[in-house]
Image 1 (cartoon, rainbow, N blue to C red):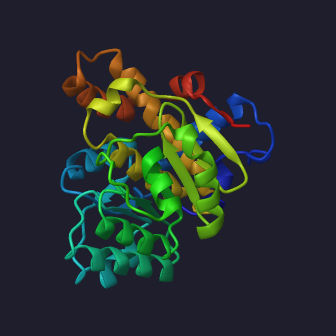
Image 2 (tube, helix red, strand yellow):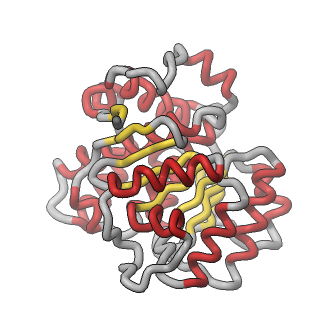
Amino acid sequence: MDDETLNQRRQQPKTAANDEKSESWAQLAWTHLECVRNSSSPPLIQCITNLVSMDLVANVLLSAGASPAMIHSIEEIPEFTPKVHALYINVGTLTLAWLPAMKKAAAVANESKRPWVLDPVAAGASAFRLKACLELLTLGPTVVRGNGSEILVLFNGSANANFKGADSMHESTDAIEAAKSLARTYGCIVAVSGAVDIVTDGERVVGAKNGVPMLQKITATGCAVTALIAAFVAVTPSQPFEATAAALSVFGIAGELGMCSAGGPGSLRMHLIDALHSLDRTAVLQRANIANVS
């Protein structure tokens, strides 16, 4: 869906730089989800993601109304990637064999003027992984989403001997200044996941405070929300800041609603997918919690 079609469906918000009321952000979150669902054809999201996350990523995208494509072969990228609406690259189970395909897909997405989103999973776990993430950063992602530790490692440019894999040792708020710096340096949106999900373009900063702690007990929820960001950016490629905040809030709301019926992490995973599929306007407008961060 192009921006012209989107603008026919809604009134443009004043600007996220202003002190918007939470109701305006809530409406924006609903508008993005509605546009993904009501597109004439589901936005096609190419996912070069890790082996652990493929199932949940695909199901989250399908539940939101997008179409996932788990294509990572470098031989297919020149033909396939120009057809997608957005590209999602996740380095969770990075191998030397996959890295060239990731770089090629990013380059083709740029050539085709398609947005792409990077998830630098466990960026500081090894020198090889950090080098790969920094190289991908130079290829100009539209959005980068990581936890506090991952964003700080990218900012510092050095691996951390105490890095705990995909788990963060830092709060999202610890990485605000690092996120702003990365956003300015690479010309992208940076999102930092945490109790409050931080989103910045280098100047503006908002926090999305939706979700439940038990989401951290389900593997690949971070990967899945990054894929949802890609879907939201796909329908509003000129508004990646707003799309990123909206996706984080919508995913968190689905987690909140899913938790109402869940007995633990296993059932929450199922109810999360169901809640995202059935999420309605009333729930989003009542629950979306996005605000400027001073």
